[in-house]
Image (cartoon, rainbow, N blue to C red; front, side):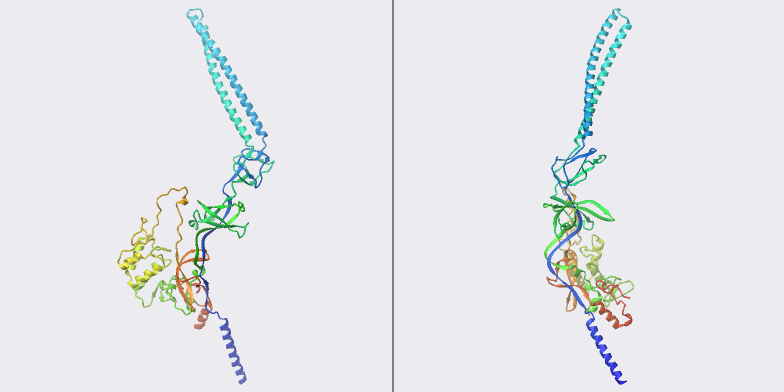
Length: 585
């Protein structure tokens, strides 16, 4: 019995040691995933797809219907302007020309006959008038009867009427000649159209007919050939999304690739952004034409291009990985590191808002309204601090109208923030101004209130007239005077890219340290680092590992029944934003 007890004790000790060894070697250690800040080039580009096409492409058709009798050009044929490239069967049109010529000759003969008849009737009318004059004298002498005189008068009038009829017939015959001439010209033109020539110098890119085929010309001319004027100059027709078209302007460099030449970069230049929108499935795009040189003729019409329009470029600049900018430590991370939550990480988490403190687990207690009042903080200071944080919050605007609502052009909102600023203590005002300066915002108006001196003019502060004004922190863009331009894109230029505020985290002595930085352009992988207390080679945090197991172990150690509950932080714990923000259940 005693031996059995000893054996059981030994087994328990060995099992406990093995379990401890296993837990110590298999439990995850809290560590940081980092990336290095480096130097390099950053290109901010707009990506899209497009189709290559000739700058000028002419479709050659037929204006008459007939059979194709001869072809003088084929695919890829180089043709000159006026060169015969096809002939239609002219038999029918030659007969129409001959018939029109015969009709013209007949009309001319009728005209000559009419003129001869006019001369004859003129002589007859003259004789009848002389006879009437003689009969009139004889009647006065009572040598002829009145009936004979009346008969001669009627004969003279009939001769005059015949003259008028001859003149009308001559006019009709003249019109017939004009009509016959027009018909002859039409027939001759149709005959000429049986010979099809090239309208431009270029290359035949498409042939749609063969010898013996019948073409029917009705309301539209049938397509026979497509001729590209000059394939050494091409263009890409790209559809730019409405969210990116504001950053595209003529003259920007374009780099693109085609499937026919993988790995080869071709270059072009934005030539035109057309204002006519195209809406497909509620997606609005704008056609953008890109000029492309093609001296080696490797690019073919119709090729699909994957292009990038270069909006801006920075060379040899500090750049930070975007994963480091997106990293946001949660309350669980700081708990796992046994680190107090820094003030920079408070506020703005997902879930229920925790007020200025960033959640019930930060520095205050949350009530049912979702607001948080820090302990041992006077109510007036709470209001002043909240105003300062609202004015300088990254998504809350600020004195220069940053992202979010900002001050904008709302005078009432400006006045409210100024009144709140005036109600702060000197220390709070100084902290407020320092926070604004750290975010690159104009503080001249607030400094003027604090010091009682007139505000200095700022390059970024403009009045509604477009001129710099003292103490003004509202920027109102205005168009300049009308310019003489041939195209609309010469009047409207894209806004220059504005720097934004960001934060990266350093992992120093197993503690997270926030660093506020000012960011420039981004290429999707890296972002330009304009200012910040980091250098080339500095390692910045992109993620944390080992947080989940540490948190679960702590929860189990506190109360085994609460091992799966959330204790603060936002929904999901790890992704709770800056300060967690939400209340756990």
